[in-house]
Image (cartoon, rainbow, N blue to C red):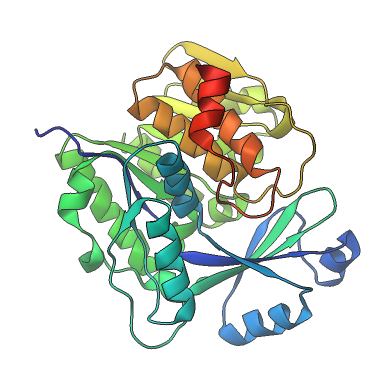
Length: 332
């Protein structure tokens, strides 16, 4: 087995986020569930909602893409696999992720549909309500996988959002096989309760089959996965079924379970919550970077909390502050 040359290789939706401020009343009027993600199934639906948005700001996004951008900002070496279309938004996404220091070589897809976009409405309390048109990202084929790239990463990181379409789901199953065959770890984020409602059986099967080494969830996702109403009961239910379980709990901090060890960290203090878009993604970035660098669980959790705190203090899900400087100042 050769030594890995990348810290993390991620597979996920290649999306350009369009963020706009909105009042709670707008969320209600549009029939949205505040703080959640909903899919839009046609470009016409996406165009109609876009027309109702206030002034917007375009920022490259996608859950796993945000995570590897965060790891790169911390000094890690990462690669990303995701499908864009041969269009302007596809060029924006490719430019941004490469400029962040992430290797990205997936060939763009010709023709319709367009590159994925996520319309994000940020309410005054900083909560983000997402409406996603998956576009080209849902047509990532297994043939687009760079097997050598996957084999060269210490950790393969997969996002639950991409499990919905059939083609990328098959691609991710193949990627897990490649990572396993090369002795690499597999990390998986549940992404959203919406994903669990549609594919919870698949996720539970991946866990039961021992295919997940590191599982990321927030509190609501854990409850949905375990089909429990009480947090501690859900933790007890999943305990021992994955080698590493990481659960974020917003202002209550985060926990990690590794074997019989349970580690808890507090949320980092901040001045104000501006936009929670990408908080979980950047928490995963800090934690995975810590693990790739051989830090212990507690330091990895603290690094995750630090990265999440940075991201929620501005709009967009890509870091604006120097994460390496922040980490050095807070963690040494």
